[in-house]
Length: 449
Image (cartoon, rainbow, N blue to C red; front, side, top):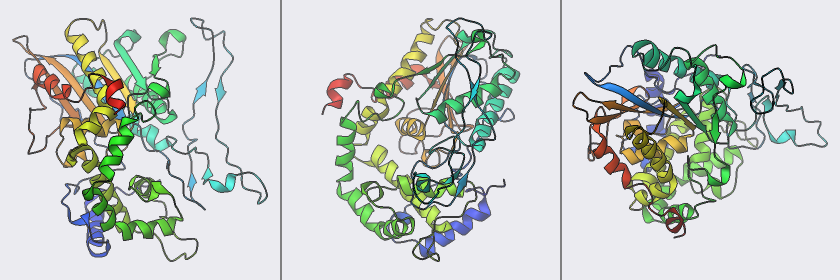
């Protein structure tokens, strides 16, 4: 299937012109560095442009990635679209711990079944057609991470010789995903290309670590930390945020009527509209139309303006709001601490054979990290599918260590007003001092506020 790139310059120029002339007044006039923005596809690390630090030795790599292209997580009534997720299949089997694959339950293949509604009973009239669950990684999303894994192999295996050509010891890689299916499949796709043709014996299996949902830290865990909801509510009650909702209220109301959606989730923020529109846009699908009036449809200009509104919303909550740093501490601070401590363990010689740590998460994993680091405007927009944030630890000839941060194939550029370090080679002490401000010292008491 041919897809239309959101950032293809000619298309984007047309969208932008339409948005400027048709969109409701408000924050559409706020300057966002989105002229090259492409939500549908990330930038990938490139072996052609990648360079090692002169004279330095690469010691450790952490990669935090967003899952690939997926189906919408926000459902709209009377959805007549079709989503396919069965072009790349997954087979599973059970076996006793340590046993060979010859002593198993045999393999199984999971298929998502959405039957045609019979007009009388069942609930299949409440979802699209096809073979996809809500929020499931599409075949396109699997290919995105396969491409990312191939690119990482070209750099860290073929060019640098840092990672082994064949993974003979799983002690060299650490993998963690969230409990959600699409992050697991994304990691499988990435690592399958980074080390192709691995065996399927229990001894060759890469341990996939997953925290129980109740204690997850790779995104804002509001069940475990009620303080996240408290701070978020305070931000949304601010005059700045309420003015923003009023300014864009006419567009929100029109889209809600077209999509036939109601409820607080559709009136207090742009996440759901962003999801519905961009998921379809990335697959060149027809945008939603009103079932009461088929001539009333969402437009390309609406995609652009809803995207800009969502970017404004998140930037204000996590960056520009006076409570932004408080929200970051509670939302992603524990995970920041995990990344820092793992890096420190490696410096202290406590990491064993570990060379690569892969964390497969969500936009709500990668985006807050970009805000913590104070990424510039162009690199702090909503992270595209399969976004990749890479932290490299290098040891210089004098024994000192620096950290390089690469986002979607480019060295991270910081906001002009907060250039606290050079992300091509940031001294470890400087890096740790900056992120320390976002790591909770007592998460229990801070979450209870």
